[in-house]
Image (spheres, chains in turn blue, green):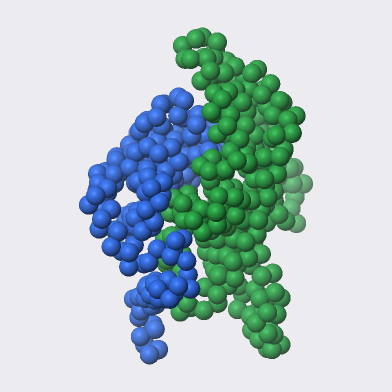
Length: 254
Length: 266
């Protein structure tokens, strides 16, 4: 038994089985009438509703809409954030002046400004993308600067001893050395973007997956609402795992 | 023993470093003022130019007036009280459950390996989508917002506590065990004092997530709180008021974050 516990897969599988067991217990309690079926649907109904929602509510199409918004805001964050982080690295006094402000921006409840974005960008994808961009920008800027500042002096000295130009120094030494940190920033930023995209879609009732949850909740289709929420959580978790794998893959570059 | 010449050289080098640092501090302050000045100037120019519909970019004077008006209104303070109550209650519940869960995850390796990956991967998911479930369970009043805020703060506090638990010096744990401390004594006399910093950091992160979740839930379905106030100002299309309220809310969030951060550092 102790050798089984030491296996890496065993505890995680045990944890997963515990969640399944909770589902089975909830199903039993609902059938026995101990839990109220009007506020908690049968887990078996939720599983069945998952297929219904995928087929009847155009889940894949909605996933595409949310994915597109995510992609647009994610790309914009990288295209603006990495150069901005590099600028802060190059101009030390500018970094000292605004770095704290950017860090404060990362903690600010920017999503609450969605009514403002609705007025400026209208009721459509523009609002979702712009808000996700603003919400996700700070981490990539901060991590790019951190990665470039943290480049080992010995690497910079090697570049200088080879008489590298400023551009060569950046592309051959600084950027590759900072890449793992930059990707950590991108991972954080894209996580923020995903939260903003789904959150704003849900709040404003526009777009893809967030809107679907709102629609189903307003129809009081409980099993479908739970199924859609489960689906979005699963998609989010898969997205994070994928980003983390990519980040680990980049680690040897350090 | 250092010669007088060496001492003079060291003193002058230190003076130079101090001089360079104070010059740099002056430049940083100038840049900050310049950034703020340029931002204000651009904003006011765009507002007065008529290039953009003026209500979208109201003048700074109008926003300033609205800030003062809001701060003097009883409605703002009443709504602030509601949001503060919801956020602090949510944070308290999230902190108590998060610290207990964190101690359990951090104290037992098997339980940590079994459940921590799930807590870790669920922690960054968009929590606001759980609001319909919270409404079904707790109704449309304050309780559903508190529950959602508590759930939001739980994850970061549990993960920070579990990480802090693993960093505790093993000697402290052995000392506690050698005194035959009970589980409660171990938790209150050894674990919690030793991991104060990660727990407070988790609470700081939890405060941010719980505040934003409570505010967003208020914008969705509520008749009180700052989130509700944002929506009612938006529905009146009072853009200067909307900017003013957002500035105040951002300032409150920053202040709360700073206070908990300072508490953690002290």
